[in-house]
Length: 403
Image (cartoon, rainbow, N blue to C red; front, side, top):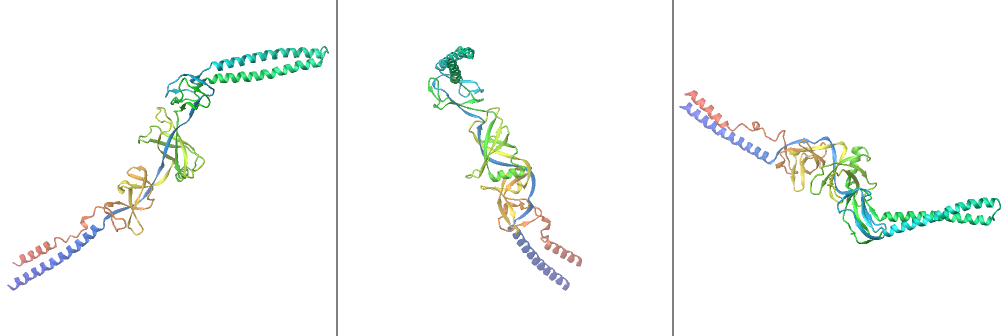
């Protein structure tokens, strides 16, 4: 009887002791869990680099290679037009006619004057030859010979003057037919048939060449310096892509083949130019868009996993671990991607340590727990929850053995 009482007391004591142990373990586990819940677990990786072709964006404007104003070079009434607005014309193609009659008459008169002067010159050529023989034989006075020589020289000069007048009359007659100076597309007709035109009337129409087309764009001087550093020279041709203001990408690529000889002091930019093929006449003079210009050679650039980035209204950002192992928010600027990684040109650098998983609960400047993986190992949590059950079973075995 006494032995059973002792055993019962021992069981009660063991139960009380077990309860105390379980309570303490539970409190410790709860505190640890609360601590773990307050400090987010994250993984951290070092930013690596990869060789990529650099690209730079800039606003751009389309320009015709040739933009020519068609002008009247003589005075007169516009009598004919030989094209329609928007037509494609070839260099030398007839566009307008300015009343030719008066200029044709002037050219005819100039030709008659020239013929008359040449006839007189021919006459005095022969007279001079005769008088030279006569004066050599003393058949005529020297003064008569000198008079014929003077007449000969005067008509020779007159012939030269008449030739110039005739050429000038022919030139003016040619100006009555206004021709296209270059290949291209004709724009709006500013002066219609029937109007009086002169050299001061302004443009009759304009012609813009259409293939190829120029695209000019300003890039910041520091970006231009970067391009030259990567490629090793400024005198290289680079690939350029054009995107319309609507967001549509142009089908053909261009080549940057010109750069200005100065930096714009007011904007800190330098103007570059690319030449684009335009077989479908899609690029039009004066259109706006943006370009991407690519370096010829590759440059080592930081890459960041896309899964390690988050986004808000200000843009993409990552968390960088500082020297105190605390997270710091940093906005990044990207220039494309390689696989599942962003290529970054601003915001992080190679060698920075960034949080790659568990970013959602991170608060900048607050401590984080760095682990190998975000998924916590449940096997490391305390296994004391069943202590009471084990103690009770052990006591049952003891009591059972004493029966």
